Length: 283
Image 1 (cartoon, rainbow, N blue to C red):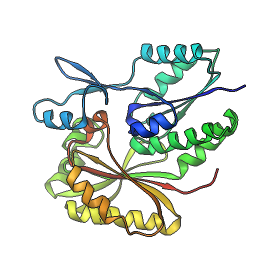
Image 2 (cartoon, rainbow, N blue to C red; image 1 turned 90 degrees about the vertical axis):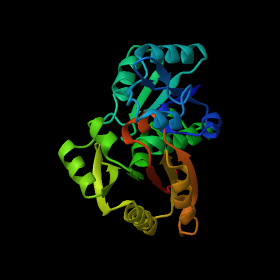
Image 3 (cartoon, rainbow, N blue to C red; image 1 turned 60 degrees about the vertical axis):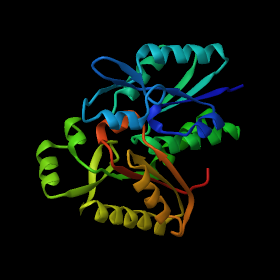
């Protein structure tokens, strides 16, 4: 008899409601200041990170090997036979590779560590789909086989107020980033098939960038009905208006709203508006 555990990390940005509904075990990343270390989404909020960025830009750290081993031993004790762990993109964090290393030492469990090649609810949407399949009684091998197709149907796009924090974190080239800021160019950033950031489109100024983001959403919805999540990073009021502007667009089967984790906020800075689009499919 299979007993399947579902694991992800805190950058998946799932609400407590989804985490509880699908019994997702969360490995928390860490935010490290000079004088204190915080646990992502446990004892620090995204807003606290944004409020402090002008004073200090902290470092971020993936869950420790010890955290991973403790969780896997606990799952063994609780009688789980199989584990599906879905992580933030290996192209953006060392979490995936560290999880693979930890998993290799737990031979009593059948473990799949799956690279979402995404982040925030791009990863979270895969977790939700996986949770639904576990709950419906699908077998481990069937679920694992379905994950690549689910991943291929999910896309992430976002804009930021400033490129300053992406430049500092090495997520975008210093020369192109500085040039873009001088011209008030707002790139629409996405994630490619390798799971790393790239510039999907460009716009002059935030207003045009938001309009471009809506165009991208409509293009995707013209191809297939989709779920859409709107995410913000330190831009609640602005993002609520953006969210409201999507409500009457045809072919949206679900419209969600949330914020990105403090760990992601360190690298993007305040003012982020993003969307995750999941093309509908039947599993």
